[in-house]
Image (cartoon, rainbow, N blue to C red; front, side, top):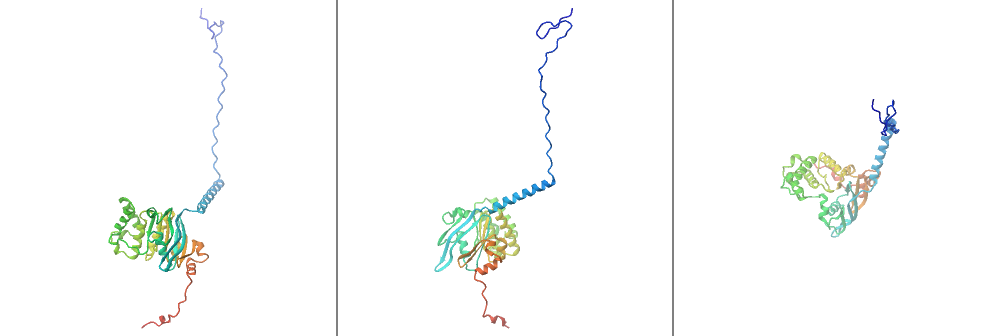
Length: 322
């Protein structure tokens, strides 16, 4: 006889029947996951509208940044200087903000050089304060002059040095290492058109070349503020254009320039803010458009300086000596 099949409980199953496996509880089938729909490509019209919106947002951000007041880099307050009974600078106050190229213009003897000499710490004022950032030029000269690059009027150089030696010496005075001093010397020589002149003694330079090597010396330590007294006097047009490009790049990167000049056309092309000094007093100061008004800067300058004077009594000039 065959063996009886046992049920899952261990009891024998009825004959003729086979045992069935126990029923499993009903398991829910996992719900089928839907594939995410592919993102729709924006239409050409919507893409163009998005680009316009982005440009408007960028323009608004730039306008807001431009409207926000920039940091004051140079703050001159109530500055005065006299030589005996002659008043050279009469209680002037100026503020120059970061990134500006500030033009300081006036007739001969108006007080431009005296003012810039006091601003740069070369001449002590009778009264007033000069702040370079937050450092007083007279109370904290080291901190102030570390931020300052200067091209003064009638600068006396160590003219027995070559141009390369002079720039290297200036770099060492400002604490640059030798490698940086040499690389910056080469960079500035290329930017200012001095490449072929660095091995010559400075005493053999022309007046224009002395101006260029002096500008390079003022820039070599990467100051945040440049004070330049007549930097383009006797400089040829090509070198002037190179120097102007350099100063514009300097200002665009956050540097600040204060320069004096008698060339109204150059000031009008280069500077964004201007002050006009006449007889030791500031007669106009502000943005270029504010100062020049509806005319040219030269017209406004002549007007503030007293106008043109008619030349009379020189009829003998037309007799022509034989």
